[in-house]
Length: 150
Image (cartoon, rainbow, N blue to C red; front, side, top):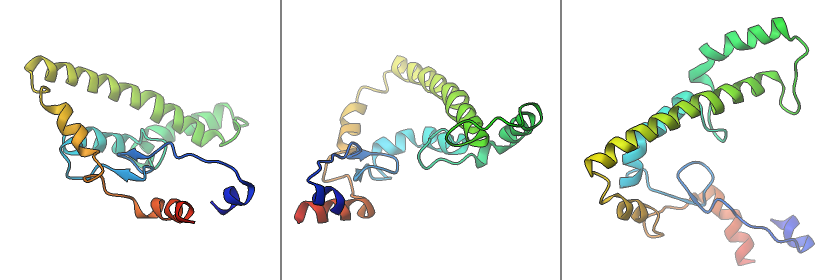
């Protein structure tokens, strides 16, 4: 922040509120919204479909044979900037697994809408992100607060 201030540069924070790792404030873990989507979040964690803060540990049994195949068949394949291993992991985790997960969520959503169980959800979801209910991430807020208060 000091560098920005020193040079009179502007900055913005595009992740003000979220449910992941980056927002300055986030929905509380016990909020109705996070309770509702917890199974999908747990699945995302198992499949490693998030780029930020995700892990490929749950899908290494799929990725290791693909890595070995590329090592044998394309030994010099090292795409810029992260190399073969991360490139392949990204294609599988974020393309394959995420696509199937979204399709499954969409199908599940249609079943819920047909049963009429979503009528009350929008208000509960919105309430999860109200300032009074969205706790701050202290690690992320401290530098911003210090810059703002200076």
